[in-house]
Image (tube, rainbow, N blue to C red; front, side, top):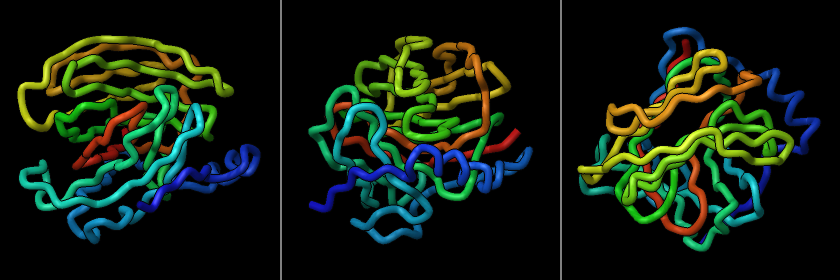
Length: 214
């Protein structure tokens, strides 16, 4: 199995390169459905990184019987990730401060969700949910120190659920299957990269990752 555990850039260079990435324009919608990607290959237009504790990560396009957008989805297929490690697939060539992010998540045993406002591997936010138990958390990492800003529990009545994150200045609001999860404050809102993440052990599958600027 091909495995990856690579950071995007050294810290100082990361910040310099971030300023060169275009921000999502107001009303611009970037839809990632993976249906044009080759099965069992890495998804195109994404970069791969380990956040938090070191851990291996491997992302593959997979064929799914009934994903939100048929026929393909993507999976993070390394099951033995440490609890404090997030494997992230970051959408290339775009940054976002304010707007809406949404992601289809299959009901599997594990924890996954959306990483956003990522400046580098030590500064980012993430909304992560266990679709089986419905437990969701909003995490903030600043200078490598991770804190929990909010927590909630919801239900996953279907095979696939949709996680939505709305960003407006310091306000961060998350919903699962159209029902509010929590709302919290980002004390230093700034544009950053956005992507899909899995935390801790388990294999997770995702589809329909949408980035919409505001």
